Length: 88
Image (cartoon, rainbow, N blue to C red; front, side):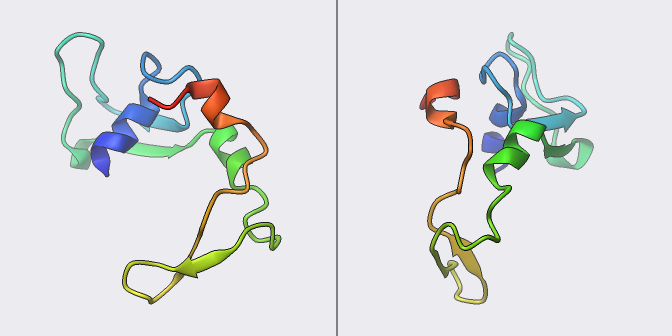
């Protein structure tokens, strides 16, 4: 999961980053990101738009991996993320 989070914070991997990272998230060269205990992150405003209507009954929910909570089947995105950032 951390590798994906790092990629979502790297401006050279994502045209419109979805994670605002604080700390060492790597570089374009061969420098990898710092260990997760040395980094912090939050969602960018664009990512917040992707989940803005999550509680408005706009998508279906299913049980998560252990059946304790529900998770959305898809995100009710107001932005076309696949068109904006590509499939990676």
